[in-house]
Length: 387
Image (cartoon, rainbow, N blue to C red):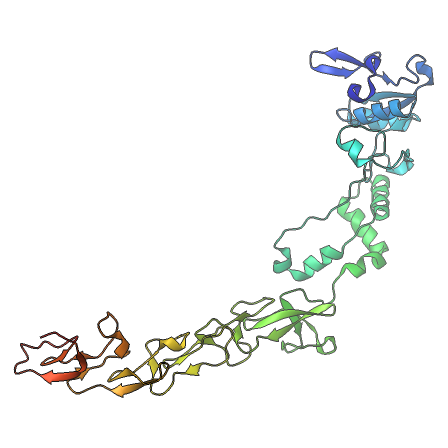
């Protein structure tokens, strides 16, 4: 107060710091009536001095002849205000003065910038009534969530219930609220969601539980099962099957997931993508089929995701042709072994390649021509040059 008014007569020092100067230990007089207190208009607050600094600044800036006091107890605050014609600190919704309909003293609209730094020349900013709910309520109970989302109790309705409570103090809060509900059915029935008002993750269903796409055939809502997804449709949601090349393994989802490479989905509403079988591959994401390896080639495992995963079967080897990108599988040469994936390009390396059988040998200069040895002991077989 002193910082923004420089009213040294309205404050005094105490062991706790600067405080309002109160005459007779009760009243703080505004500058405009301080020297003639009989002209001051009483204003009584409660609690620990609710709004005291705010009222003091308003009195100074608007030259209001106020005498401000604080009731020692809650009963003093309400009793003094009801017994005398005075200004009072009050807020809505609150029951203490509801039956006398106090009038609000109007000040210029709130100035947020000034209020934020403690300058009070304007009205206080109204606080909105906000609904708080459990953040998992929508998933746990969509109907209840929709009800609370729509619920909007007006200030007029709250005041009506508070006045009822004031007149019927022995009635419980629940009884008063129930009485209002019975008398104002037209206000709360729109809060109740219809049976076909689905939320995200759900879809319309017929009486037999099957998914439908129109409100005309719907009787309720149900969570979309695995293999299906939820999509908005006008004022509700419907469930649709995942398309080819997609899957969804969880219920109540809003999207399907494309199959990774090496996997596919060849039917709608797939819960999971299938693995490409031995001898097949799929390089693209979202595949609905797998591609067979060329010629006699196969794969060493399922879920192959590249043509490069196609190799020659056991008993054959991949031989280079004249064209650089042309390849095929030739029978394994006599005296040699060709395990799955044998490739002429692997000769001399750690990968699968044609090798000599025990009792045979090959030269490094002729790795695909096997020579029979006089004794198996001298030729253990294996890569070219072992003898």
